[in-house]
Structure formats: structure tokens, C-alpha cells
Amino acid sequence: MANAFLSETDKEIGTSAASVFTCPASTESTIIGLSVANRVTSQITVDVELDASGRTSGAEDKVFLVKDAPIPVGGTLVVVGGDQKVVMEPGDIIKVTSDTASSADVVLSHLDIT
Image (tube, rainbow, N blue to C red):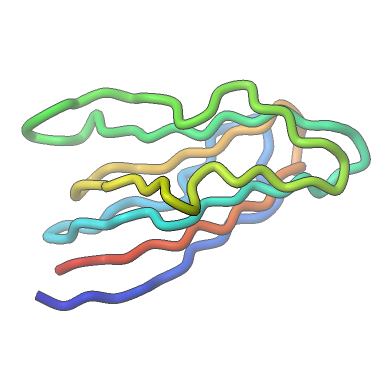
């Protein structure tokens, strides 16, 4: 089994859900960090969702990691980090949505085991 630390980014996320990261086939991924930054001049509200609806076994749900979370001007919300981790299975997707157009930047760090 091979391990790799990787990072994903997405910028200017708006009111349509952005698929920031999809766990690859034959891989288990552990999200070790996920931060959302406000890039505009007013407060924004964001949702971060784990979409596991594509799984072939186990829990096949779409669940929120945060819902309607406010991020002030110049601020960053750390959704995953420190002691908290999120394990993803092949096909799981992390999606981010903001209430404001082109307003959120995301950095997601993960450890992949193949």
C-alpha cells in the first residue's frame, strides 16, 4: 500500500456547489485539513458537504460538515483540522457552496492510501 499527502484547491466558489475533491477509485482518503476563506468585502455563509451517495455499500448519504457557517470579512473557517479528520471512500465527494457569488477559496489537504 502506498501513502501520499496531497492538497486540492478551488477558488472563487459561489452559489453553485463546487466539487472540491472526489476520492479516487481503489483509494481511501483521510481529510486532514479543510479551510474556507472569505475573499469578498462582506460576510459570507458557506456549506461544506460530504456526498457519499455514490457508495456501493455502507452509509450512502449526503451529510453536512458545516451548514450556513458564517465567515467574516478577511476570515477563514477551519472545517477539518487539529484532532478532527474525515475518512472518505472511493467516489465520495467534498462539495462547498457559498451564499455569495465568487466569494470563497478552499484548501483541502488529504492523505491517500492506495
